Image (tube, rainbow, N blue to C red; front, side, top):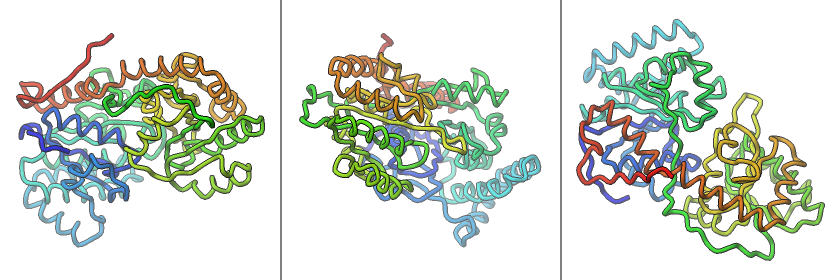
Length: 431
C-alpha cells in the first residue's frame, strides 16, 4: 500500500476479531478506502494474524496491536500503565464492567477480559492517537471497543454482520446498542432482525451500509468456452457453508452424465469430512479442494470459472451467512451464480433475474439449478449480465465507504469532508 497523507484529527481505532483474515477481505477493502479518504486507522486484533496474508494488508499489519493473553505479565503491566495514563477512564471502565456484570453474570469473564485488552491498547498507543473507536462484529470485539472508548473518553460505533446477529454468541448487545454513536449493518435482513430484537435501534442510529468492491480489480473477460465446464465455490469449510450439500448435488449431476469439474477454494475444520464424502460419492478427479488461496489467486479463479455455486445452510446454533462476499465478487467478475435462500442472499440473487436461487438444503433443487446454468448458455449470459449490473449499482466501494466515512466525519466533528485536502471521494451517481 502506498503511503498516503492522513489528517491527525481523523485518527481511529479499528477493533477486529482477527487481522488480517483471509475470510474477511471486505474489512481490508473498507480500511484501504477509508485510508484513501484521509482516515488514520490503527487496527486492534483480538487474535494473531492468519498465516496467509493478502499483499494489501501488509502496511496495516505492521501497525496492528495484537491482544496478549489476558493472564500474562504483559497484560498485568498494561493494567498498571493504563491506570497511570488514564486513571479516571480506567475507573469508569471498571464501573461499567461491574454494572453490566450484575445484569448478566454469564458475561463476567468477557467483560473482565475486554477491560484488560482495552488497557493494553491504552498502554501502547500515544495519548490522543485515537479520537474514535469502531468495532467490526458486535460480539467480543465490540465489548473491547466499548470499554476502550470509555477509558479514552471518545465515541464508539460498531458494524454488525451475520454470526453476531443470528447466534447467542453476542452478549450485552443492548448495552452496546445504547452506548454506540451509530450501528451499521450490511443487509436489509440483518437490519430488520436488529430492529426487532433491540428497541433502542431506530433509523437515526442504525445505518444500512452494504459492503463494497473496487471494480478495477475485476476484469471481465470474453465468454468462457471450456471443453469441461468449471464450477467454482469459495468459502471456509465450516458447517454453515453447506459444502456436503453441494457435493451431493454434484454427485446427482455426475450420475446424470453431465460433464463438469468443481473447485472449492477454502479451508477449515470440515476438510477431512469433505474429502471422505468426495471419495464416498465417487467424485475423485472431478472435485478439487484447493485450500486457502490469496485474493489475487481467487480473482484469477473467478476469471476462469463458468459457474459459481454457494449452498449455505442455517447451522444448529443459528449461525448463518448474511450475504457472502464471494457471491458479490462472483457477480462482479461476470460469472452466473447459483445460491441458496439463506440469510440475505435473496437481496442480491433474484431467481431467474440476477442468478438462480434454490431452497437451502434441497439437494435436488440445487442440482437442477446447476444443470440449467451449465447447459443453457443464454440463461448464463442473461443472469450474469443482470447480476453484474446490480452489483455495480449497489456495491461500489467508493460510494458505500463514502457513506461510512461521512458518519465518522460527523462523530469526529470534521467540518471539512473529506478530512484532508486532496483526498479523493469518487462517488458514482445513482442510475
